[in-house]
Length: 166
Image 1: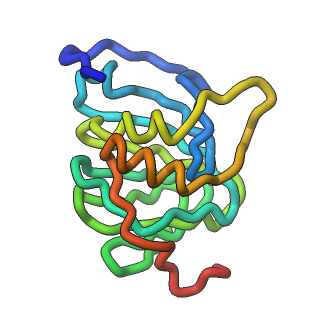
Image 2: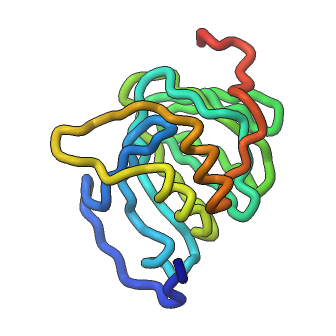
């Protein structure tokens, strides 16, 4: 997919944007796509269930910023764990190993990838959210395969958390 090189003006109200079930767990609402921003960034809201966990991974070509809107996550960043609640932010520069675990039901984060080069990964690792569909099966094989085909993510290993029951 060739990215549009010209950014578009974007105005989206709460709840607006393409909604997609992400096979890593959670519902993404895409607020600004790579194409809409001329490749500058990808911005989406991620609604996640309690205990969702990600494998240890990096984004080789983009910096990832996660701003916690509601709830709480445990962020593993470059070997250290940090608890982040509403208003907290974590920035993983490209290539820095990180993972997170959701600690509260109803957790929502705003996720920003700069540049927007990870969109092809997220697109193939998700599907449009249909009527009455609010979740689906977590499928890390699909996540891994989308990363292999599209770039955007490199999975290093399993979730790294020292206390899995936190």
